Image (cartoon, rainbow, N blue to C red; front, side, top):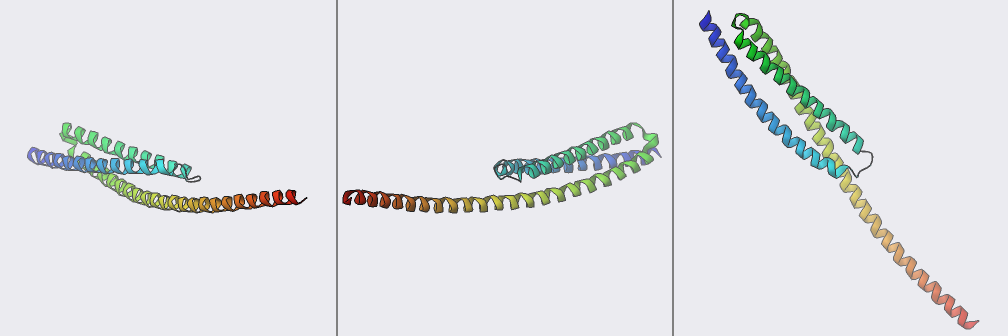
Length: 167
């Protein structure tokens, strides 16, 4: 009876500690991803058309991360109540297991979305690099046109000067 309940409580506390550790690892990974994403986002602001999409995706991910964090906090609160209310241990433990499964599914979904977003960021970086190369090519071509124009203007001025001398 009571020994079994204590054992189950201890098991759930150990499980909670493990999940807290996993949560901390996830938060560190998420923070690193957010820092990396913010850096890339700053560089991509100059690329018209992508800024709004990137900001919307970033905001969506931040909201999903807040939702997952809120679910984890609710789970921890529910587990603390379960320890205090030993007479309802069985029902509370089953509820907590269901929440853990949903949280894990949410975490997996978030990891997939983060991976997809990283792919989009890489594609945007490639687009920025391509546009930079095209801009450099255009600048080089413009310099050549200016040089030709200056030579033509010099030739026209010389021709006009010679024409004036002969008239």
